[in-house]
Amino acid sequence: MSTLLYVRTSLYGSQGASSQLAERFIAEWRTRNPGGHVIVRDLAADPVPHLTADRFQAFNTPAENRTPEQREIVAYSDALIDELRAAETIVLGVPMYNFGVPSTLRTYFDHIARAGVTFRYTSAGPEGLLTGRRAYVFLTRGGVYGGSADAQAPYLRQFLRFIGIEPELVIAEGLSLGDESWQKSLAAAREQIAGLTAVELAA
Ligand SMILES: Cc1cc2nc3c(=O)[nH]c(=O)nc-3n(C[C@H](O)[C@H](O)[C@H](O)COP(=O)(O)O)c2cc1C
Image (cartoon, rainbow, N blue to C red):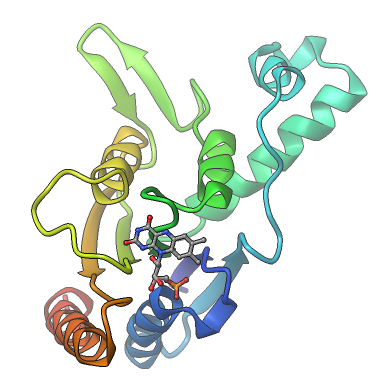
């Protein structure tokens, strides 16, 4: 059975523009995977706690030496990672908030970036361990950043590649610049989704 993990981050839940794009893609995925299973992780509704020194220490303590509290902390992170591992397809809906990704996504990433579990260091550099999965990321922005460097798309690409996942990005920008800009940008994103689903999901 195919499994898709959907990580939603918009403050507006499924009403968010990023969610609507992601959910459009997922609807198409469902028609092509009738027996498929979709897991929804809504980080706005159910945020992952901030990484603290205690939490990080728990990750770095050998399993046999962990206290009961540390075991609980690691079990929580392990469960998030198992959820990712169980999915062959990962979908993220990610708005730009204050020039970057939502802080809830950062805390989630802090819990799934685990040395020796989702990446490892080798003499040739870091190696991601979650290979063999496809990620589709739907990004929205109020302003227009075009080709200029921003702290949303390059960051997401870098993080996902670090843990071994090559992402496909769909970006809708200019969503706060009036109705015309909104319509045009979302129409272009929907067209991109149609192209993606025709090529990628048919494979
Ligand atoms: C708290 C907050 C911060 C935002 N910061 C930015 C920003 O830094 N740059 C930008 O272009 N748009 C910014 N926006 C606009 C959103 O990126 C835009 O409305 C996007 O469509 C939101 O996606 P969503 O509907 O999926 O939540 C911000 C919106 C909110 C609510």
